[in-house]
Length: 222
Image (cartoon, rainbow, N blue to C red; front, side, top):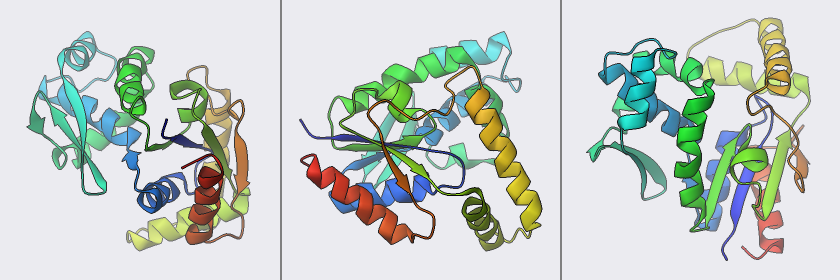
């Protein structure tokens, strides 16, 4: 069976960029878990439910039929057959995603959607709990990390590239607080997945990170 590769880890470790690069290098699909939550957030907004915790929001996300699809090396989203890949990036969707994703019932809705894609193998998924919760039987579970200073530096550079200039010390404090919240939360906390492999990316380039994980995947038959 072709591999499912999960890449978990704390904020700022480079999970998304690395996961996309690994998928491209291996010719695998990249499962954008964030886009799935955005799809449900859009469904809730279209139903007039701007409050993530409202009964109307939950009813909307339960009723909609969401399908991820792949075209080239990118993943798109369809809601009830409509392509909403562009629409899920709207600012109002972004505001609703975080509170919606913190609701246990919403995560339960997406669990079978994600696992269904894993049945076909040849998949790379990244997040906080892809190896520990979503794909606990994945043959390669990577825990990508880097020291706090390195992660804060990367985050500052990402913000600057988007035209946002932030104080480095403030960014560092935010990531440190995010680490604390993610590790202590009751729902899908950030933990090292059983059978996982730690890859410390401190001082590594993105290319080196990708190459290291591709090498691990090759060892497992990718």
